[in-house]
Image (cartoon, rainbow, N blue to C red; front, side, top):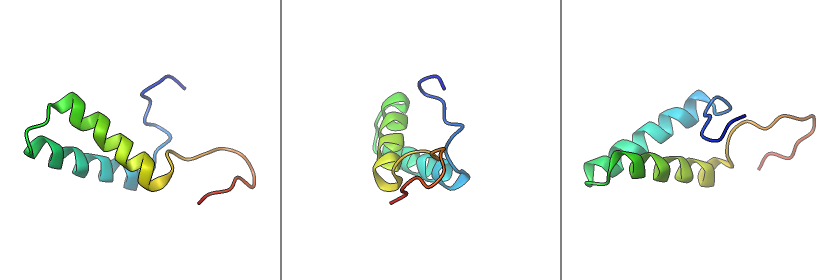
Length: 59
């Protein structure tokens, strides 16, 4: 999977990132920076995208 590929994220995570990104843009942060911060926040909150593997520990 190439870097920046968001296909492994759930629809809920994608909606969260969009909402967070909009909030940053409203505060005057550039679009690129807002997107990066939004995905970093989603990763911190949810542990990242869906993981493959049987019995993988999901927190």
